[in-house]
Image (cartoon, rainbow, N blue to C red; front, side, top):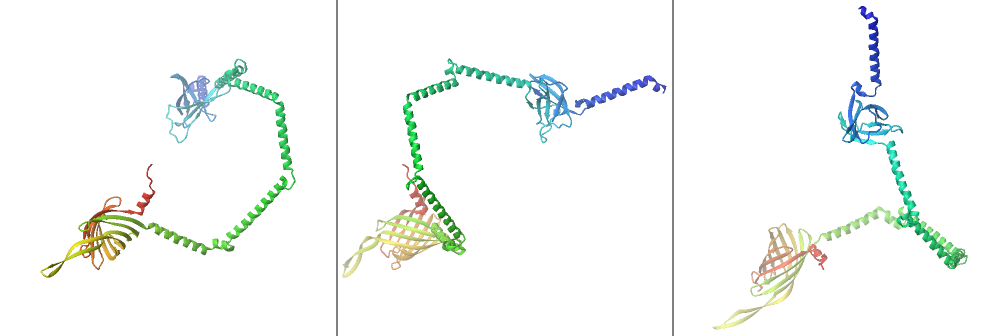
Length: 463
């Protein structure tokens, strides 16, 4: 182990220790995080990379977090490859901003990691959001553009105020128009000095008259009239105050009107009366009214048409009232008989019947029991009753009526509803032929409700 104590070993050991210390300190001082293997790589494109230097620092909030690894050319643009520390969490919304560093044109890269909730940026991926802040080159370019615009404005101004270029520019035309206007005014005032003096005198007279009117202290003068108007306004204010006092008393329940408005019993009675009237109007509105018209041809011996016009009032679904007027061609029947004598015995033979029109009335009360309806009252001027039964969803109705119990008139009828209120009917009248008006009949009619009548009355025929 004598070589350990030799001067050569000691010198070599010293060189190794010093070299290692220098290397360690270099890695600690260096801004490139890739030296220690703790880094992320990314890249972005710039139109102009002037002012950027390879291995220069990349900052976030003014703190170095990485370096520019390389600057190359890609598709006519500058590709900037960067390396940042691994604790800088870049996302897909990361933003790179090129900022000026001094007035000499130096630049540095400022990086913003992006929104924390966005997906992370893969290692070696491109950063798409790139912004370039104002630099000296941009400032010089903008100043150059401004100076060019100012030069164009000055040239246009110079050309517009010259005599040759006056009509070419709007500013020159304005100057020319102003010059003409001032010239016309000077000429007009010079030629009409006397008229202008007269106008001034008239204006002076008007102002003097107004002054006299305002300062007139007579009974009908402005000052007295103004005082009267002020007094009227004061009286109006007093009236309004009295009105306020009266309304306050009414609100407090004082006086007859106040008690009428604020007394709960009076209000309840009024509400009850209003509800009763409302109920009556609502009930009247629910009443269904129908108009009925039908005519039937009576055959057999009568051979004439019977006409009926009626009104049906239905206050509910289970009942209704019917009033009808009938023009009956067989209302009165007269018979002529001939007496013949055969072998000494007299025999009476009916020869002819004569029928006369008669107006009759029908007044019935009807009660509905599902498809069955019972009717009773006066039928064609005689007491009687009727039974109706409905089939096929109330389209077909079979009816039997018995009235005029002195001669027992029995009538059967079938009625079928078509569309829009139209219907057809047929049957046999005076089936027992006790009144001499037995006849089969066939006819048609129409039944319209109040809703149908409202629709017909409110509709307007097109012009």
